[in-house]
Image (cartoon, rainbow, N blue to C red; front, side, top):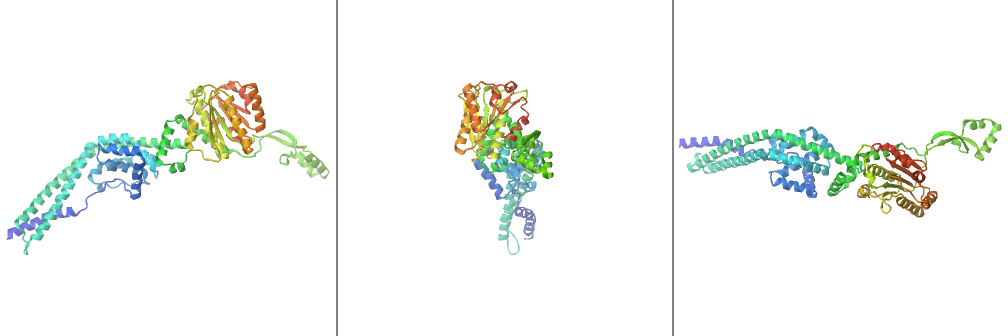
Length: 540
C-alpha cells in the first residue's frame, strides 16, 4: 500500500507543472498593430472597394501563410494615428514573421515620411500597401523558411498545450478514482504516467521548434529590414508624387475625402499617365504664381505719375490749385475751373480695369507646339495649357465664365465651357488639358468662335469687357474683311485681346498680324519662367 501511495504523490508533484501550463494563457494575438473595431472596419471596407488590393491579398495568400493579417498590419501601420505595435511576447508564433516586418517598417527612417501622407486617410494607406507589393513579394520569398519554421513552432506549441491538457484530464480521473486513503488504481496511475511522458516529449519538441523558428527569423531579419525599407521608401515616393499631382491640379484634400475610392484611384492614374503628367510641376508653378498675383493686386490703385492734365478729380489736384482756396479772392476762380473741369491734376498711368465678361483662352494645338523650347524640355503646349489652367482659376476666383478653345487648322476647333455658376469638374478640366489636334495653324476660326461666345453673352446678359488670351507659336494671315469685322466687334463688345507668342519673337513685331489683333502682346522665350505672364493675372 505504501509503495502505491508514494507513486501517487510523485505523479501529483510531476503533474503540477503541466496543470499550471494548461491553465496559463498562451499568446494568441495575430495582428501586430493594435486596432479597434473601427480600424478593422476601415481595412475590411477598403478591401471591398479596391479590386487591386483584393487581388493582392488573394494572390499572395495562395503562396504564403497569414498574408491577410500581414497586409492588414501594413495598412493599419500607415493609417493609424499613431500606430502601436504589440510586444513580441503577445504574438502567436505563426505571426512572428509579420511582427518582424511591421517592427522593421515603423523603425525605418522613411516611415514617418510615408505617414505624413497616409495617416487617417484609408485611400492613401491602401495605395501605400499596393506600392509595397513587389517588395513584399520578395520579402515573403526571402522569409519563407522562417515562416515555415514559425508555423511548425505554432503547431508544436499547440500539441504541447493539448498534451498538458491531457495531463490535467488524467489527474482529474485519478482524483475521481482515488480511494478514501488516496490510493489510485494502477490502470489510472498508468494513464497519468503516459500523459506525463507525452507532455514532456511534446514540450521538448515545442522548445526545439521555437528555437529553430527563432534562428530562422534571426537569419531572415536583415533581409526583411532591407526589403521593407525599400518598400516604405517606394510607398513614400508614390504618396508624395500623388499629393503633388493633386495639388498641382488644384484638387484639395476636402475634394479627395469626398471622392469614392475607385474614382480617386482612376483620377490618380490619369494624372500620372495623361498627356500633361510630366508637366505637373509647371502647372503647379503657374497656379501658384497666379494666386500670388491675385493677392498682390489692389483694386482701383493709382498708377505711375506721368505728368499733369486737366479735369475735376479733387483727389488728384496739384498743390498750387489747392492753394487758391486759402485766398478768398481766388476761391471763385477755383470754383469756376472746377465747374469747367479745368483744374490742373496729376496724370497717372495705371493698369486697365479688369474685365467683367468671360475669360477665353485660345490655345494653339498645332504640331509645332509639341517641340521642347530652349533645352528646357518644356513644350509650347505645356506652357500654353499651364497658363490656360491658371486663367481658369482666375475666372473661378472672379466669378467669371471661362472658355477654353483649342485650335489648329481651320476646321480643328474644340470649345470647353466652364460657367461661373457651376463647379468645374476635374474630369472636364483634364479633358481640356489633354486634348490636342496636331494640325496646322489658323487664327480666324478660334477668334471667330471667341467673339461669337462674347456676342452671345452680351445679347443674353448684357455683359461686355471680356478678355481673350491668344497663345500661339506661329504667324498666320487673316483676311481684310475678317479684320474689319474683328475691329467692329471689339469696339461693340469692349473686349481686350492679350497675345502670347511662344518662341516666335518675330510674330510680335509692330505691324504684324498679332500686333493688329492684340491690345497687349508679348513674346515668351524662356518657358521655365512662369512669371513672364505674371502681369496678365493682375489685369485680367
